[in-house]
Image (cartoon, rainbow, N blue to C red; front, side, top):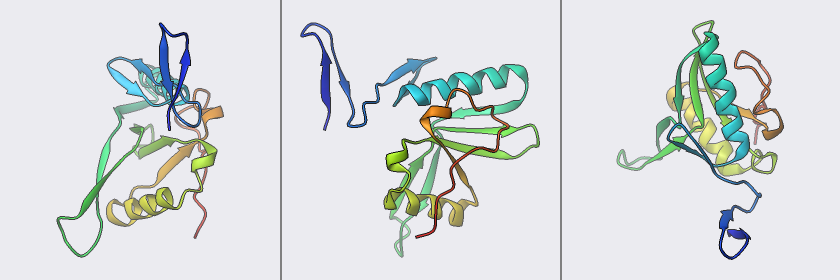
Length: 141
């Protein structure tokens, strides 16, 4: 459920966790933390620490026996670090990190595409350098 904030003349929607959408360079970010992470990665890109920055990359997941049953997992960012590794990141609120649906999607992504997603807590989104190994691991079921 969305909440409305502001005066009657200037209202904006806010999601249930209080995140406010931001825009930068033609992209819409779901939260200020995701936007800050984008600014940090853009800085890292300008310094040459990362390359091939992609915003909101999508990965197709096959759901079951029928090959037509698919879903798309949309991460926040994808880039190549200085070691040549492809890194996929998602800025997530700690309340969502234990979500069973998210954990299932991340496991399917690993099994089907051999991609591990780094979950970045909102507090660290703008501060973590792209080459940092700090992230949150998804615990087993």
